[in-house]
Image (cartoon, rainbow, N blue to C red; front, side, top):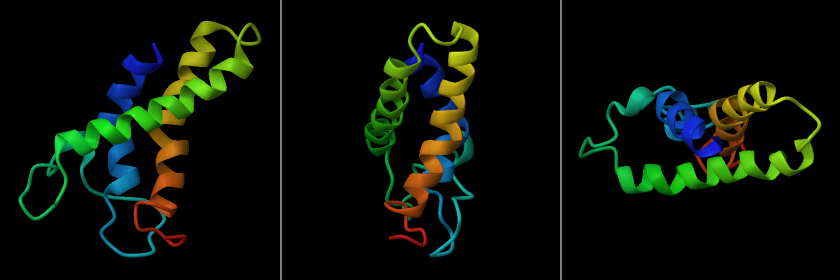
Length: 103
């Protein structure tokens, strides 16, 4: 379920928050929502790069699953997984590898 929910949330907003920087030093990205603009010639981004980064986002969510095993209900964990893949991980990536203020 991490991979299924993670793929949807990463496609909707996660990749955009992580790598959609328009101004250097921004808090998070503001383009590539729903995959729009990824294949533009000027973007330098491809679906292969999107998938590569998606695997790291889902891995971040699965690392936490070990500490939450048998401590929370499945619906609560799935909500957390969506939040982790769609907001927490992408914002930290935007700050560092995405060209944000810690780059």
